[in-house]
Length: 315
Ligand SMILES: NC(=O)c1ccc[n+]([C@@H]2O[C@H](COP(=O)([O-])OP(=O)(O)OC[C@H]3O[C@@H](n4cnc5c(N)ncnc54)[C@H](OP(=O)(O)O)[C@@H]3O)[C@@H](O)[C@H]2O)c1
Image 1 (cartoon, rainbow, N blue to C red):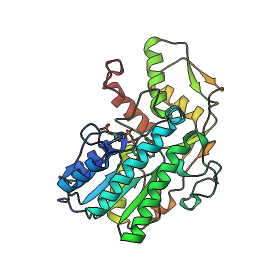
Image 2 (image 1 turned 45 degrees about the horizontal axis):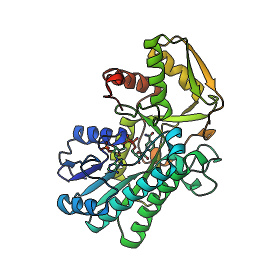
Image 3 (image 1 turned 30 degrees about the vertical axis):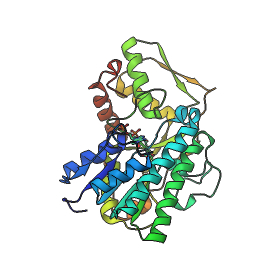
Image 4 (image 1 turned 135 degrees about the horizontal axis):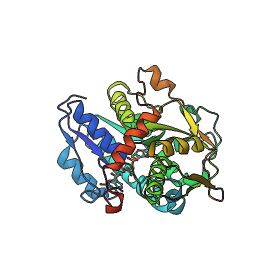
C-alpha cells in the first residue's frame, strides 16, 4: 500500500476497525474512507454498489460484522448468519467489480472444529464439527474465507483472510448481553467494586482455556500482512499463549482492584474447552506480538475508566 492510496476500513467504529484506523493514521496513510452502519448498511447490495462506485477504494479492510460473545451467538444465530453473509458477500463482490487492489477479510478462530488438536493450525479448517454455540457465525466466516479463495482462483483477486484469536482493547463491547469474556470480566469486577458486592457470579466452570491478543497488535499484524502477504491460504494471528478463564478472572480482578469472591455458575455453557491457535506461519514471516496480557488489560481498564458506563457512552 502507498501512503496516498485510498483505504476503506469497513466497521471503523468497532474494536478492530478503530484499531486499524489508529494504526493507519499513525503510519501516515492519509486517505482512509469510512461509513457508519447508519450511513451505509453493508447488508444492502445497492447501497454498497453505489458507495464503491463513488469512492473507488484501492484497498479494503473488511472489519464490519455482527460480532458477539457466547450469549448473543446462542440467542441470535439467524441474525449472525444473515448479517455476516450479506455484509461480506456485498463488500467482496463490489471489491471485485470495482478493481480493489487488495482486500483483507477478518475471520475468527471460531471457524475451527471444536475438538481440534492444539495449537490449531490453519490446515485444520473443515476437518470436524464446529462448536454448536457459535456455529452460525463460524459458518458465515468460513463462507467469507471460501469466497476470497474462490475469487482469487476465478478472477485473480488479491483477497486475503486472517483468523485472529480472541481480541481485547479500546472500543470493545461492554454490553453484558453481547460482550466477549474479557470485557465482560472488566465490567463485572468494576461494577462489583463500585457497589462493594461481596461476590461476582461468572459463567461456566472457569476451566476452558483461551488465548488473547491486544487489538493494537492485531492492527499491526493486519497492516503487516496487507503489505507482505499475497497468498490464498488463511493466516492465524495470535499471541501464542493461553490461560484458563479462571486464571484470566483472577488477573482481571487484581487489575481492577476488586477484593470480593468469585462464584462460578456451572449451569451456564463453557464453550470450546481449549482454543489456542498456532501463529507460526505469521511469526516465520517476521511478525511478533508486542503487548503482554497484563500490560494490555491494564491499558484497556484505564481506557474503560475514561468512559461512564452508566451514561451509555460505553457500548
Ligand atoms: N472481537 C474479537 O474478539 C474478534 C476475534 C476474532 C475476530 N474478530 C473479527 O474482527 C471483525 C471485527 O470485529 P469487532 O470485534 O471489531 O466487532 P465490533 O466491535 O462489534 O465492530 C463491528 C463493526 O461492524 C459494523 N457493522 C455491523 N453491522 C453492520 C452493517 N450491517 N453495515 C455496516 N457496518 C456494520 C459496526 O459499525 P457501526 O459501529 O457503525 O454500527 C461496527 O463498527 C469481525 O469480522 C470479527 O469476526 C473479532
